[in-house]
Amino acid sequence: MTDFPVDMTVKPEVTAFFDDATNTISYVVKDPNSTSCAIIDSVMDIDYFAGRITYDHADKMIAFVRDNGLTLEWQIETHVHADHLSAAPYIQDALGGKIGIGDKIMVVQETFGKIFNEGTEFQRDGSQFDALFKDGDTYNIGGMKAFAIYTPGHTPACMVHVIGDAAFVGDTLFMPDGGSARADFPGGDAATLYDSIQRVLTLPDDMRLFMCHDYGPNGRDIQWETTVSDEREHNIHVGKGATKEEFVKFRTERDATLAVPKLIIPSLQVNMRAGEMPRDKDGNMVLKVPVNGL
Image 1 (cartoon, rainbow, N blue to C red):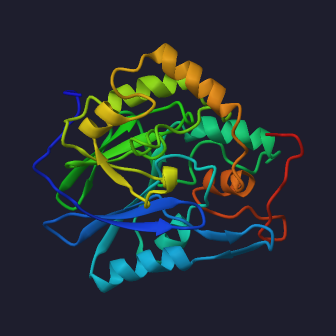
Image 2: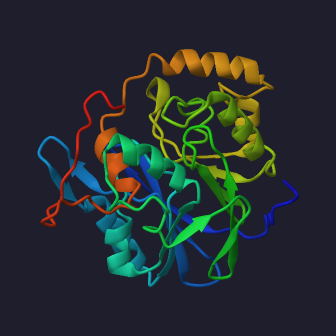
């Protein structure tokens, strides 16, 4: 990892916001030496069966930023989530800031643009986002330099974002007792995910790792922060030197037993548009349900 500008002396202030409905953790990440901040993996609330969206979770983050006199510079999407909807445009309207995602979003847009029969009006060039990150790209949050690590496997567009001594891993890793995320979505691959995890585990031992999801395995309280050394030593899927062959066998067998995420259909349509709701020709918000398409 020496090719990347790791600076463990920079210690961002991280505030977590847990969404009970989707077991998602969103973050406000503040530069300790200024009012600048970023938001990582925001959530828009949806009652899918009622066809209603609300913004309670996003409003809490907006209130936190305003109440603390912060300036939002970035909203980072670690990947196109399949289990919750992004609130990035709503937050951007309230607070400003650029919306960024990995440049492989174009692969995801091409794949799911076909599945959802989006037509030519749906741009598949990532232009819905303000910034598209390549592996190793850097950006600034106040005086903090952040960088992105390409970590495909769960999806083709996953990235881990490193800000000082904190890394936001998306769904590349779970807490040590949670293991890893599935790799059976279109474009996912267990062997690729293993390689991506190994990249993350070359970061410094004391690097703080922040999860995007936690499900409280075995009834424990929800957690979202660990370290590289803890993951390397204790992760139930990749810790203690687990081989790629072992991981791929386990992950493939495990994924075959998992149900489709409850919000995958609305999530993909919204998130590949940077959080914007699809609309029909009259401007009404709509969602499609592809039959036997996923």
